[in-house]
Image (cartoon, rainbow over all chains, first blue to last red; front, side, top):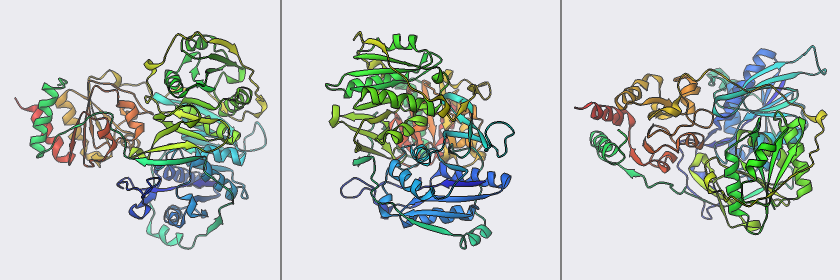
Length: 261
Length: 321
């Protein structure tokens, strides 16, 4: 089983946004970065499938040179090798451009299964995986909470099959079957993440990261005209003071103003 | 024209479809609006949709649309878009739209702008606002591809009750072409995991915890506050993912949607997936160490500080007298 996992490097949760002078992107020099959380779950799922079925896990990422940080981390957690589509223009690329860039690089290898997180914590388009599936010409399903692989089904066409549990809204789920190869977008919480061991970190240094240049002529399908702080929908009454004072004042307002206690 | 794709399951219209119609009415300008109902049998849904002040309601019926698959929906919609040539295709940002809209956009090679919370201008000059960076920033974007732009609107961002009604639109069928042999997914019937033992939607008061609680060992802090308030305990997704509280206690797009009289968010940053599940609450209190956390955008009362100091003080205050 040859599994690809697409991961993205995104600003950390603690990062406080600062914008470039033209206010169309973030000041990357002020940001620290980490692996997009849903992608970490996709990687973990790939590692578990490999442990069950054998084969290899190939990490794929599109971005500037800084994304090597998360590629190394994925290799340290146990991925076998990596593809890095490297170009500075990918830092602020939208989902369509990222998907085209990855499709061009991944098309040469024939993956049985492609996993990625359901959306990124930066631009959050929730599109990349599905567009990639369409470009690779393989079926997809999204927001997956469980993956079952039957590599040698006794019925049906002579290829592997997948059965996946898709999350619907409001606590509903659905099982969906499809042939391999296929692409799945993975929901956070599908598994418990492992962390890199010292041995893994050492081993990662020897693993291959194949750099692939960006194919020419790719453009985003949307343009960011400006970024700004969100508009508050409510006037929030902020309560200050010591914890005891703030607690007392909050309880008073909840009783007397809001009358909800 | 603007084509609104309504969502239905087993002939029940998804409420969010009205929100998509409201967004279409806001941005239409001189463009006529057509609303499309897709499914195996959508007569009743079309009748409901025809109450809206739109130019026409289209019914796209095909046996292969009875159970949703992204392949069948993409084929059906591509056919309708090729026939009707809309300038914009609008729909709600539901889990179903998330599953097929990117495939449709990729196949048509057009822009897809998702999770839209605001539209400025109308017609071809419209720009769209959408959250980025977990709601820490709002982006204003425009579509750059030629051909129709596909736009999905965030649940709750446009008001269903703002839909203008009474346009007496025509209701007519539209031709649906699906190569059923090309449908690769085989769906089984939807199910609910466990019977919801706790119906948070009925709770008067809710105390909800997020990542800021740091460890399962700290949960009693929140549970004591909930007890003192007469509240149910709930959580954001990461807490339930970690197994610290059962999934049935999860509030958000993948969990329960709640609207209690009082919602107290402890150490919850306010990712949109959480906000959509609770922003209808009457009074919202947020306690968070990060003054810029998006949760404060929906909060009526906010305390910036260390929840490990504030929550015990709050519990003590409530237990007085």
